[in-house]
Each structure stands twice: as C-alpha cells, then as structure tokens.
Length: 238
Ligand SMILES: [Zn+2]
Image (cartoon, rainbow, N blue to C red):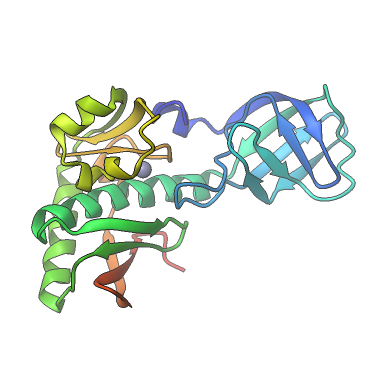
C-alpha cells in the first residue's frame, strides 16, 4: 500500500496485463494480496462484458486476482475494481491493533518479541517470545491497549532509512534485525510521536480510536517460550 490514506480507497480502474483460466493480473490494483501475516482483500471486478467476485489475491509485483473459470477477460481490457470495504476495514483495524499490542508487550514484558502474526477480519493472533502470560498480565495488557485506543492517537506513515529507524527503536522491537540488509528504505507505520514505529507494508487506520474495543479471546503455549495471544475487536466477532 502506498500510504494509509490509500487504504481508504475502495474503487479503481485498471487494465488487464495477463490472464489465465482462473485469474487476471492488472497494471495496478487496490486489492491487498496475501502477505505479512495479513489475509487478502475480496471484492469485485466488473467490465463491459460482466462482473465477477474476487475470491483470492496473491503475488507481489505481479498481483493475481482469482475470479474463477470462464471469465473471458483478455489482455488490454479495462476493468473496474471494488474492494469489499467491511473486510478491508476490519483488516486495517486488526493490523493496527497488532502494532499497538506488540509494542506494549515489548515495553511491559522484558522485551518480548513478536515472532509471528495472523491478521483476519474476525479474529487475529500474535506470537510472542519469550514470555509467559499470567491472567493478571493479560488483563493489564488489554487494559493498557484499550487505554491507548481511547487516546485516539494519530497513526501515520513515512519512508525511513534503516539507520533512522534503528536510532529511534531497538531493532528487536521493530524486527529490523530480521530484514535483509539489502533493504535500505522502508515504509514505516508510526503511532503518535514515535510511541510505536514499525516497518510494515500492510493496511492500517488513521487513528487509534478507529480500532474500537480490543477484546482478549485466548492464549496458548506454543512451546520454547512462545505464547500465542488471540484477540478480536468490537463489531468483528464471529
Ligand atoms: Zn502493519
């Protein structure tokens, strides 16, 4: 995604640059493909000859939109894309909540790192290591997170160099130490005035208040000091 503002765009026009039996690749797209622990967007593609649901989106530089067999689209045709906003917005809220919770866990529990995450529209999960949560810690964590949501702090994005990021946040907190050294410039998501800062290419909201109620679902010991914490948001529950 180019920017947080771009995450709020729902419709676009594009040209088909490749097509196979079940999918098309477009010259540009607003559909977020599977990646970075975040699920793909769904929605529709329509054109002069028809309209089909986009059921799956995959790829990096060439993004494939899966629309099923017999779509009949050919290279050079113009299509109108429309994102399923409810699902997209849930992903934006869930993903920003993940940044918030990961930052709080790092600060409150001895530098515990985020070692994995799965962002879905109805529930999401984050894996932390090394940490073992008591009931009190979970209560404290979600209380703190919801307190932060209530501040409605701004969420912004910018491009920063590796050195600039590492000068502000420990590399273990941002996972900068896991990024290939060849990556010099990164898109960074900031909460407030460097309250949290994390390189990320996912979709996010403009202010913490949009997250709404953060609700704890459960925790699970994954072994070797890793604990998985699942959460949902008000309005996102199954
Ligand atoms: Zn993110």
